[in-house]
Length: 163
Ligand SMILES: [Zn+2]
Ligand SMILES: [Zn+2]
Image 1: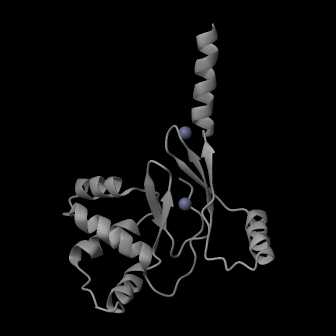
Image 2: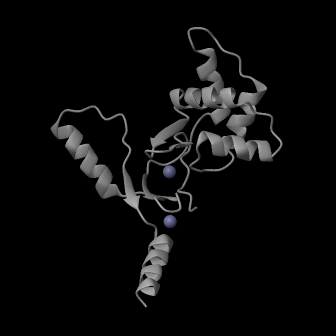
Image 3: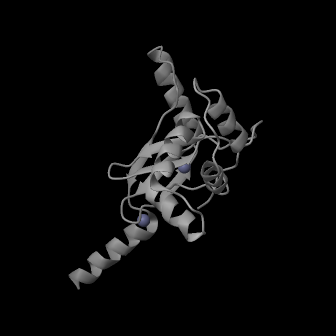
């Protein structure tokens, strides 16, 4: 996947998460499983669901429990490090910290997520919010459909079916 340029941030994801844990009403411990997860997740930009993360991390030899992964993903969203994207049958996560604001094209055939940035779309969203005196805390904009490869495969198949 083509990653967008990263955004300069003052704290590392780990520092930010540790700060979040200690600033809770009841300070929480930063466990080694959580550390492994944060390091793993922030080693590359990706769109992943909880099960994919568990499988990948187990494949790399990490010991992660399902319950911890689910709980930690929720905390990472709460801490502003990850963004949750609802795709209907799947919920995926991606970096929301140190990464440029962007939107997505989602292929329903191969599940690929294509990222794009468009200043005109950003401007439109700002204008709509301004008109409604709406305080914008962020948005999720997803275009569903077929990527070029899947679309080509489908039209080729249809053509062959007709022959
Ligand atoms: Zn596709
Ligand atoms: Zn993305």
